[in-house]
Amino acid sequence: HAKEAGRNTYRFFTEQINTDSLAHLRIAHSLRAAVRAREFALHYQPQIDLRTGALVGAEALIRWHHPEEGLVPPNDFIAIAEQTGLIVEIGDWVLREACRQAVAWQRAGLPPLVVAVNISAVQFRRGDFEQSVLTALSESGLAPRFLEIELTESVLLHDMEIMLSLINRLKDLGIKLAIDDFGTGYSSLSYLKKFKVDRLKIDQSFVRDIGRDPEDRAIVSAIVQMARALNLQSLAEGVETPAQLEFLRAQGCDEAQGYLYSKPMPPEAFEVFVRAMGDEVREY
Ligand code: C2E
Ligand code: MG
Ligand code: MG
Ligand code: MG
Image (cartoon, rainbow, N blue to C red; front, side, top):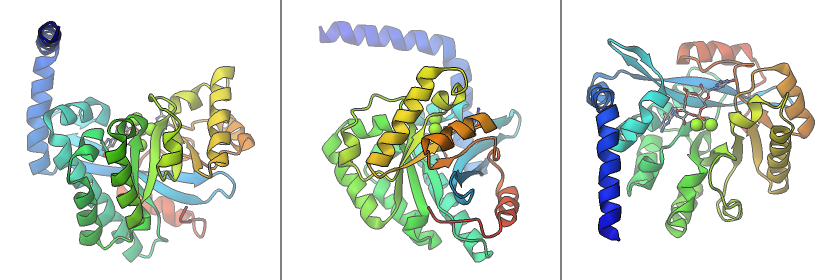
């Protein structure tokens, strides 16, 4: 039986490689060079408190400026970076750069702001993730409460005991924890009781069709109510229209992020955005 499974796996792999190998290998190859050539940048997208309109955080999103291909979106390279293991080096860079930037903004006189960083499952489950967080914090001098890590539901479900103790140690440092793309993973909701989660980020696929799909409305509304009952913050991703915003507000959703407010911006533009907010900036 094991042999058979092995053969099937093998066949699956060769088919994959035949169809995707060229593009895959090209990206993998230039990804390796990209780390050394410093072709990555972080853009920042504002997160807005729906009750007060205040800016309460920024999500850091990676951008790859490929010398020939131009801008390559993360969805075109993160999976390959995970498969090749390069995500560890890239993810380390993202953590350190986000912390460095957060401190640079504070030193430039901006009101302190929580910066959220996306963490890949591969990166998180490596033995030294805790150490890379500690390094990023100590190297930059960022107070831990200004760093939030975003994990997806699936990361927490395997090796629950190991994940639980890792998360507890990270939370004890004082950093924040958000669950990204909430509602799309295989989640046993009981983990929300065990893990010290600060925020649920409602996946944009539910937000997109709020206007025409009663089922999406029901799902969003249920997530918001559950978050409130469990004392977690709820944040809606991908908010693009005033109508979506109205619905989210009426449900009591805490925060929103999306093109309605701003696309992710390079650091200089984000700084202008923050200054324009005046006093309306808070630590969530
Ligand atoms: P995510 O973490 O769920 O990020 C949200 C994505 O939605 C971002 O795409 C953002 O630009 C986009 N977005 C924000 N507002 C709107 C909106 O109103 N409408 C629409 N249609 N889209 C909106 P992006 O930057 O292309 O990133 C895609 C995904 O790549 C992210 O999804 C995240 O899973 C991953 N990613 C991005 N940066 C990193 C990183 O530094 N490390 C890791 N491991 N993954 C990353
Ligand atoms: Mg995210
Ligand atoms: Mg998301
Ligand atoms: Mg995503």
